[in-house]
Image (cartoon, rainbow, N blue to C red):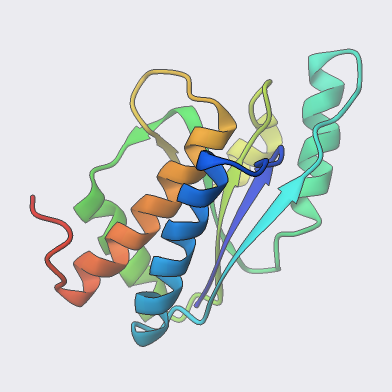
Length: 160
C-alpha cells in the first residue's frame, strides 16, 4: 500500500521541517518491511482568493488532483474523531491487508477542508479539540504513521 500526505501550505527550512523529515524517514525505513511501499508528501499552495469558500474550493481541487482513484481518504479535521494510536495502527494495517492501493491523509489550509472533501473521506481524524497550525498537523500525522508502523511491527517505540 502507498501512503500519501497532501497538505495545503509549505514547511520552510527549520525545526518543523527537520522533525517532519525525521518521522518521514523513520516510517519509510520500517514501513517498507511491513508492506507500505511508499510514503509521499505533496505540498499544495495556499489559495489567494478573497473569500473562504473560494479558497477552500480551489485548495480542494488542487488536493483532489493528487488523490489516486480508489484511495482511502482520511481527512485531518478538528471536527473529526479522536482516535488513539492503536486504533489508528489497526485501521492502517487493515487497509493494507485488504489490498487498498493508496491511503491518503489530507490537511486543509487556514480555512480547513472543503465540505466536499470531508464527505468523501472514509475517516476524519482530529488531534484533540484544539485547532492546530497545518505545519504541526503534518508533523503529528507523520509521527502517528511512524508510531502505527512500530505498533504493527511489535517495536517498543509505543509503550501504551
